[in-house]
Image (cartoon, rainbow, N blue to C red):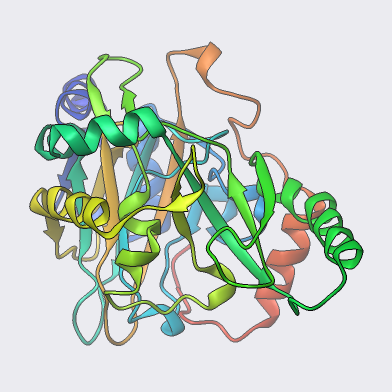
Length: 335
């Protein structure tokens, strides 16, 4: 850990300048305890995953602020597109992605891309269109019989809105058939711009999950997500899904700037979540990667309410307890 404490200021400066740093060849981070020593030496302040309250994020080691990445066998062949870890309400400042076990039968490269480079790459007419119209993202689907009476549909809509939506800590609107499928109720985020300015440097960046969430892109690559979790991206002014031309331009610009990393045990990728987007390629066999999220440690007003992992709400506890009863995808002997 001495290397990180002695070089803390330079590492933090490089992270701000470049958006990501790949640490390789360290034995320290091959264990959970060593990984924690690393980020403590850098003075990073752990926080909750932006989707923590949903119960969909499971700890690998709660005391070490370490969440599991997407390692499940059922999602081996699911390509995770580029995204910032954020919702319209909550995000994190930094992340440390650590490899404890690489995919045993190949694949699983970690994907990272510079949001500033993507922004500069996109066609001006595409950027202007998306900036002016903004986007909205649907995060879940509930398919009910389209022949149900309107009053019943509205009752279901109200129930979902009250019982489920608050758990995701997002501003969601329940909308029927926004993607054209009869009877489909979708939870849709509020309108947002796909362009952001980095809060420290002021650098304009592409800050959008469209590459990961657009249905026209997901349907054209390996995808293991069930229909209930399939996402879509809409023009905010019309609630029409992004057209194929815009999706393909986002794909072209994003993938031109992807760096695919074959991480080894002990490798850590430190990411500025406001500058860099991340994803994951498909893999075979078993894989165990994990991540710790960090809040602003020098800007108190930017932190938000949940800046430290102290306790989980009841919904999250129930979901994680249920997940603990299920067969484990990977057993780590790290402590």
